[in-house]
Amino acid sequence: MTTKELREVEPFVAMESLREALAGVGIVLPSLRVDPASPALKLVELGRVRADVAARLAEALQQGVHQ
Image (cartoon, rainbow, N blue to C red):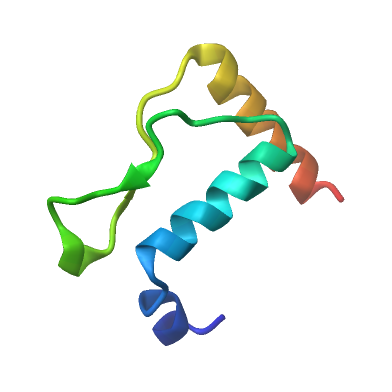
């Protein structure tokens, strides 16, 4: 995707895409949501997670890089 295309991504679409990708590797971010306070910025909040969830997320990302 180009930089312009990335800026035009809808936050709800991005959030659901991320939720599905994380679920595919067994990770749930319970606080994942679109930030309602800044709609113009199109922010997606990842929220806080337990340390074990953060470690699993890091592991999943590292495995993806090594594929």
